[in-house]
Image 1 (cartoon, protein in one colour):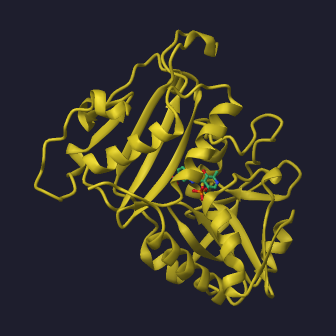
Image 2 (cartoon, rainbow, N blue to C red):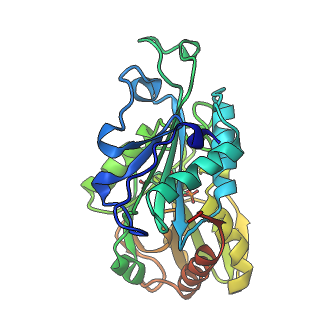
Amino acid sequence: MTTKKTAQKPTATGSGSRKSSSSILIYINGKLIPKKEAVISVFDHGLLYGDGVFEGIRAYNGRVFRLKEHLDRLYSSARAIVLKIPMTPDEMQKAVLETLRANNLRDAYIRLVVTRGVGDLGLDPRKCPRATVIIITDSITLYPKALYEKGLSVAIASTRRNIPEALNANIKSLNYLNNILAKIEANLANTPEAIMLNAEGMVAECTGDNIFYVKGKHLVTPPTAAGALNGITRHCVMQLASKVGLTAEEKLFTSYDLYTADEVFLTGTAAEVIPVVKIDSRPIGDGKPGRYTQKLIATYRALASQEGVSIPS
Ligand code: PXG
């Protein structure tokens, strides 16, 4: 495995204890490097052009949730931009687990980044002979607990989602400026997230979360072709729907369907399932987190705390 050959053995900070954030070790191209020294070249095309792909993954209770699905999506994103990841998915999995182990992390956020690598000041990817692989593992910043009980107020951004013909939303690329422009709108409106419509005015997703609504006993989310990332939490929730008594469907819809829904919620690796109670100042349903949303929050948490690839001790 790549880490074994070159990884520095971490200096113990007390057995079994999580490293303080300043002593965290970052994986860069097969080496585990202390956070302060974990730097990459200013000629890396990930920085110069946003040329690269990434994943955000979570570990719960000593297990990495849906690791295979995240690695599949990472390799598919890379393939779509003709980026060769210089290690196999199996080696990548081992590197992720080794980085978590070296940092004594059992509950963590994992950021996997693969950039085009170091090149010159031209955008031609052929100038970059080798991709840069980075694995950052850290404790996670979450929405405050109160928001899961009270729900979010969000607004619809005026920034439209990139059209798939320009940059397909399924490529989880380092080019997040489209989402960041909508996030800036959310910040200016003092809301934690913003809903993004596609060029045709159909609801796509949020800046870093997928979106769902419940009407009666029916759960609906936009198809990925609407400009939504093929979210892994989204997929879990579609599978869990029947467990809580909902039928699930991918369907194109507009803001009208959100305004008139019984319940709305968002999904994402970091957010898990989080209720939305207001959109554009309009209360959704009775203005409180819905009962199906609450059931899905609990069911998803139970699943995430039980399943996953074990981190070696
Ligand atoms: N849509 C977009 C655009 C995302 O970036 C999701 C949906 C949810 O997908 P998963 O697979 O996680 O269920 C994401 C991923 C952040 C942050 O800092 C969030 C994501 C990615 C990167 C950063 O808030 N969410």
